[in-house]
Image (tube, rainbow, N blue to C red):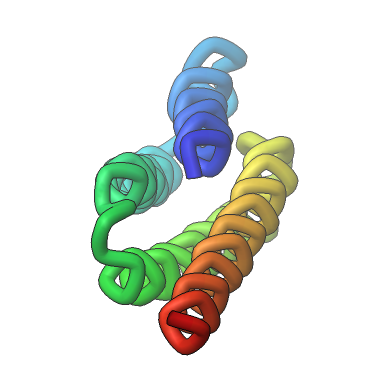
Length: 125
């Protein structure tokens, strides 16, 4: 989950600062789209970091991971949309967000596996 947050934060920084440095942001619509993508990625980072500290309540952690997966999927779709509309504006953001989707899914699988393991141990007692 920390890896997810780090990857989304990296994508967030690349999406926001790289086009400005290269002068690729040409009009206000592109800048507004990048701002919304930055806000969505920022929310995904905060949710991923909050999820780390919910280790005592695995059911809530699983539900928040599922919500974060949907949020990251939205970020990915929006990043692809932005790259489709405005050519070469942060073309590296979708792969970074895709990797964060993968790490979020792996975290979801791990927490689900832990919950099943705890349930089976409770049954043995």
